[in-house]
Length: 382
Image (cartoon, rainbow, N blue to C red; front, side, top):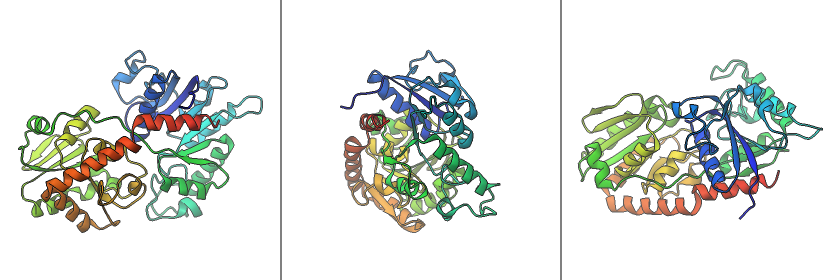
């Protein structure tokens, strides 16, 4: 095992929600178990529990200070490495960190690029625009104001801060290396904790779902309003699956309502315990994302033994092996995705086989312990 550092400082935009913050919190808890002191600041408190730094998560990812992006450098202890996961203002945050260097030595800095924000001037995921690599066009085709100048200021701030960059996927790492060829970027896949849901029959009973129902679950923060996650097409996709498999039950999780419409159940944003219960009740996880880096919810489905149906985009092929742990349709092939979901719902034995393979892949490659050990190797490079 790699020798851990004595202490680290983590910084995130949100205190609790969002993929970047959740990775930071899981990583911090794992480091605390290894004896590392973890300081954590954030820019926005988004849960009541995080107002109490003395809670059971203290020192392991709970926010211990709220600072604006431009103030991050001012709260760093001399010589303590900073692991920056997310911020509202990359330019201000990185400049503040660069200014905090002492004696001509920069702050030891790791930046995990959880999306494409550092590459472009507004887009989280560019999708159909190559401006992230060639330079944001003016005007921005998506309407982001001042995209070109913002892209340039972020790049200059990043170079000034001189971080070691980390990407959870090889897909995004290749983009980062193309944009910043002189900056080191290593790949550390995300990890998630073991699923903690009840047995499937108990989960279904708790949710009012028949034991023999065939259940497809959709999950994304924002639910049907989450455009990047294909939320605007969830209902049409579900209707196509329902026509093919009349006994199907659908779960849509992450919106802002709790309601039942026949065999379709909608849930708002839920915590991990409730998500575990919903996944335990499911036969297939449907994730029609249009772009993604290394989605935690995909790993959580795998940890729960639920096969994943998605598109072959972004870092998804690094998580899901087509025909082994799930099914990947070509980008934009909504009919093919619906057919994959319906096919697994109609073949429960195959779905269980793929789900078990996904769970084994999680154990081998996507646990929190593995993520912690990989990051310890990164910290050792500082």
